[in-house]
Image 1 (cartoon, rainbow, N blue to C red):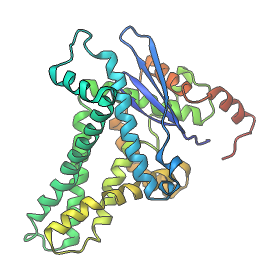
Image 2: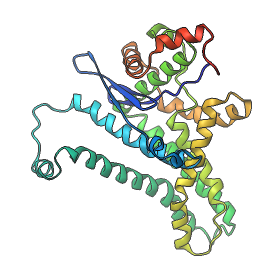
Image 3: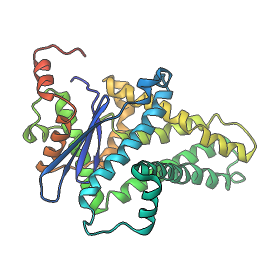
Image 4: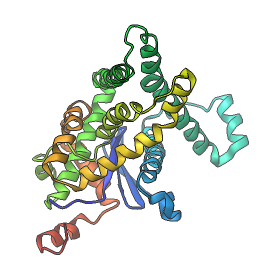
Length: 313
């Protein structure tokens, strides 16, 4: 199997695919036609070489993925907004002040809020819960381990709960369509719904796996925080989040390129979690995923080159 640089995500009634500096969003509109939007995003790493260094590149990639993800999600949802809905007074006021930059500003605010909520629920809450038990469980290592297990548990509960929501189920079906299409592409088969159906809806480079690895790596990293001051313990956990994300990214990057037994074994927890965050898609969803790939990648030439033995591992 040949690896590609293509990655993506599910959006509302659609799929986003990204390849190098280009990305495409394909959306199944209410009239059942497919709308495809393509755009470019120059990574900060392409402009500033030091941002491509190991550890640093993971933090940059995560932030850029979050930005593009929110942008494409906003685009896809625009097809399902109420057409007769008039902008409110606040929206009109903000539009007068910021003009065309309003959307980018709102996305930036949304990103900040999302990051703070995630830190609060998955980092801060487990820390303070364990701090309340420091007299009951005197061992710092044991408390840190339990804190990490609580963090993982909260994350798993969150995933299971949202997977029960009807709207999210459709998003997870498109997530499955994204993975199956990439797996079919990397196996050198023609991208038709019939071929894509044969492939797994799981993929080692999935963002779900990345988040689970973050939770697990944080347990190991936080074991080394040996300070007595409560405030410093708390601050160091927050400050070390980029380090945890950087280490996790390097593992996911390695997993995407390696088929060694060790890497495959370590990737299994993330694989199992994807059974909750992906669902089997229908044929129309697969057609959307193919349209997204075609917006950024000439898969027919790639398939031909693979069959001719012109591609290197």
